[in-house]
Amino acid sequence: MTLHQNIFGVDVAKDWIDVCDLSSGEVRRIETTPRALKALAANLSARPGTLVVFEASGGYERPLMEALEARGVPYARVNPRQAREFARACGKLAKTDKVDARILAQMGRALDLRPAAPADPARRRLAELVARREDILAAITAETNRLAQAREAFVRRDISSLIAILKRRKLGLDAEIEAHKQAHEDLAARDRRLRTAPGVGPTVASVLLACMPELGGTDRRAIACLGGLAPQACDSGRRSGKRQVWGGRPEVRRALYLAAFIASRCDPELRAMRQRLIAAGKPFKVALIAIARKLLTILNAMIRDGHDYERRLPT
Image (cartoon, rainbow, N blue to C red; front, side):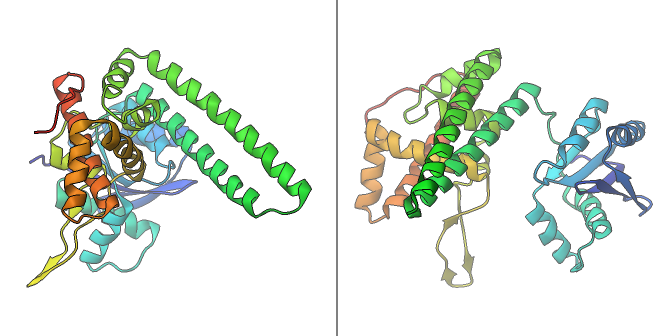
């Protein structure tokens, strides 16, 4: 158990942050300018045993993260849903920037949060490229759906032109992602190893490299939870509720679901697993989620042990 002497909760907004010093209870507002963030990080780095706690805020927290990393200040980035549930557990129903900053500081003390590992710049850029590719794919899907409903000729031509542009942008992003991976030795080696597994192509491997830095560094239960593929119990008293997967990282779950669909058709062991689950009465989607979880644990072991995928016949 790590005891941090100085815990700071930070509520992040677009134009400012609210910083709560748990030891004094003081909350102050700071503009999110590079100069102000550097000054804050310099001040925190001079205080031993510091931990900064803030929420993932859709990218608004990145300037703060970069300033803290530059000064070597430990920080923990928490899920906003968990922070809100912690606030309710503490009896805090009101929600303001100052209240949120204070709650985050208390959360850091009560839960003994583990500091995040400093982000690798190469992996961070890969994550931004992959996220942009996801945005382009979503736009293509939206415009394709609009094209199916459009009847006016000019509108159909305009939508078709935009879809063609978006598809060219997607191809450009695919090329940039591949070039970025090959330009960094560690990413290239992991990418090659992941792609030896069935169903894991360039896109799935890129998502795993960008969004699962823990791959190979944790156990199978934890990695399944991070991927949003672990069935969660819902029991109470004599009632045994239906297990469902939820939480985790949705982009990883989506990628592995598609990988599982392909892998369960071409790999003998995983195909036998799917047939066994369906024969036992499991719905098709439930069987695919189970295969995706199995595939993720295999990939985790591959990266951990440094070996490629080994195809085995079902026993």
